[in-house]
Length: 269
Image (cartoon, rainbow, N blue to C red; front, side, top):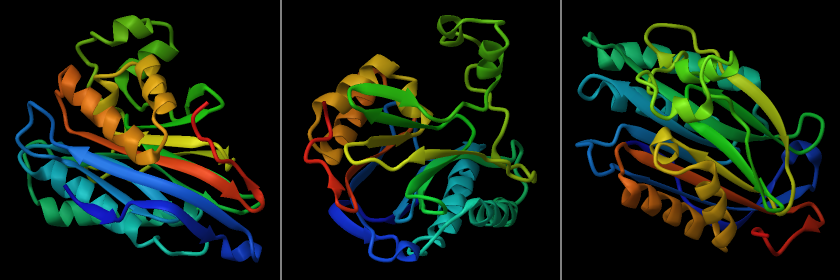
């Protein structure tokens, strides 16, 4: 597991290209190996304006090498005044080259999912959400949970085409097969979504080690009942471990307290 950045509470950040506009965030990231894995092949970065989780795959240590390469490259964007899609595309492309060099020849190849958000103010203060694979970004706002990313997986394609139901996807034999990754000597192709940056908003970035163990109803419950980003992140990971903990589980929770003069004292509602 590779980690870049540190957790923070009520950190004030300035969007430099917009003059004096400040935002106030808290964030907390945590990763656990789980109950059935020998190593943790997840990695994460929490270095504003970039927050992301990478879930490695491949034989032996190849997955850990791949997720570490992605996180190291994304961390290069930390501290930048503005980050756009072109910047993310560039560093993910560099990560593919790093993976090939660092992993060498492996029987199964080396790759990783990656999903996350970055602060963007191209038109107005927003989150730029990006995703490759089946790690996810959720938004919890005013009592409602929304999945922002769409999985790049075989079962998601079958759901989208009506071939299977969401219930059938849970037990499908190809439930772990993804259709996009960073690595395997292929150009990375992220999906991008713009999401409003709103006081009172809580974001969850997670590897599938969480979503294998908790339903959306469960995720919503624990996001709603924990007062802080740290409490929510720790509770979600512990619940995943208590349920079975079949995989590495990594969680980042971000709370938006204020955007300029617009602020809120409550996240959960």
